[in-house]
Image (cartoon, rainbow, N blue to C red; front, side, top):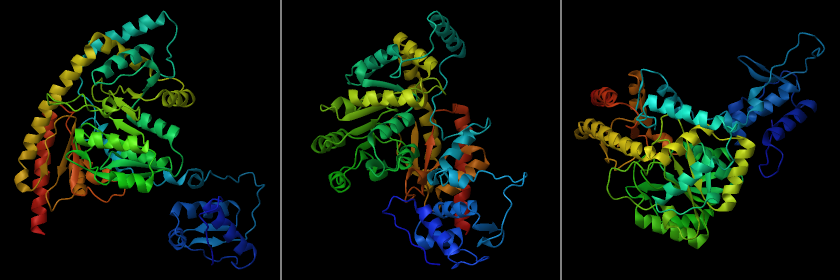
Length: 490
């Protein structure tokens, strides 16, 4: 069976395959009852994704030129059917309806987070703040907001975000050395949404962007789903390595550079001032936008902090994303983007057509707490709690360093990036932890091509209480010791 595909023409590949098989059937070259190659075999033969072959075969089945038979596969059929029988029902073929990229998704990251919702599980995976806002006070504040707004008869906010909150964000930005006007701030629900909207507004299918590696799956997945390509640059103790960055820019002509500047996810490292200056220099030379994600910068355990890239920018090249997800009420998510007026107008337009209205209540509550100073007070409390929990978790990890585990003690943020002992890989640890009701994140999912991280795991100390951290880490130490003992006995 001779079939060829041309990836340079506009006709979808699955149509090309289906049309050629149809021609072979109608011309008699494939007779009634002839068995077709399996989905996997044909996909390998043509060098296409298996889902593409599935869609082609499904199209031929819909035309009733082939059928699928258990134990046989797909075969040609000319059998007549009475389409007018009243009990004939045809189900939607979801493998055809859904796009390929939504059928072949990596679920490890999401599945681990689902375990967090199970009440008795100990989560060292989720990035959420401890609950420092008292329930009674929180309830009273929400009631006051509802009563106050009820007199105005409106529970919607402008597409750009609540005006009071934007004004408070502008004041908040001053604490980070950033000057911005009302027209340069867009309120959004979270950093994932912010990055998704920015990509939608700036990129076309096939465009390339430069990102760090390792990197949060939330970053590279939204890039891939947009049909774009992520060019990865490794990080070390001082953040993104810049030695070959200019060569990558020359080669790939990216549309922007994405960087997590403070307490990077997953390593917890901080981008050095020298590298911040280098990235800004390249941005200016190539007129290349930078997206700076800075969600964890408030959670610093040091007296000295690094200036934001945005505060160092004199050319309006940096798009700044900040999230309150690690410093506000657990489960209430709010973020903002600072950028040039034209970008903010584009993001507001996307809000108007995609979500109509942002979370009114959360915006009002956050604005109230920033205005009253409660936000800053509680952010300091969260930072101090995180420092204690970091020290507690590290005390258990220190018991394993003699066995080959090593890590850098984070200077802030919420993550610890652990290198496991030589004979232990991350999947073994994740599975063993899951059996004991503990969720941790395997290192390899922070590498888009799964080409690293097999000896790494990411731990998060921000959400659980000290008592549950002790319980979980006692089990973690036992798990590492048991896995090493099994490896030695092999």
